[in-house]
Image 1 (cartoon, helix red, strand yellow):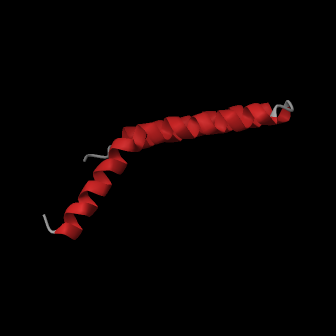
Image 2 (cartoon, rainbow, N blue to C red; image 1 turned 60 degrees about the horizontal axis):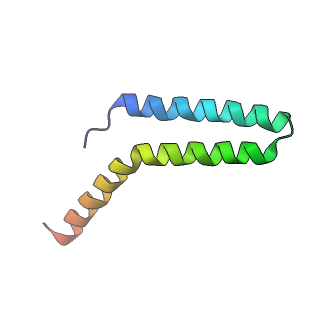
Image 3 (cartoon, rainbow, N blue to C red; image 1 turned 30 degrees about the vertical axis):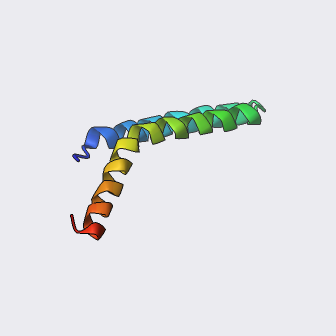
Length: 67
């Protein structure tokens, strides 16, 4: 599992873009759309890091089962 810096910058970039879009939508009075944008951004980031989370749980399982 190599967690390189590029992934961190991608997550930060997506977060900044989503925050900007959400702020603009809220100021326009589209609160429901801003919530959807935030949810979709969260799902995209979660999909990006799902492999890292799976590796983390696998390592935890190996540590506690002494394999």
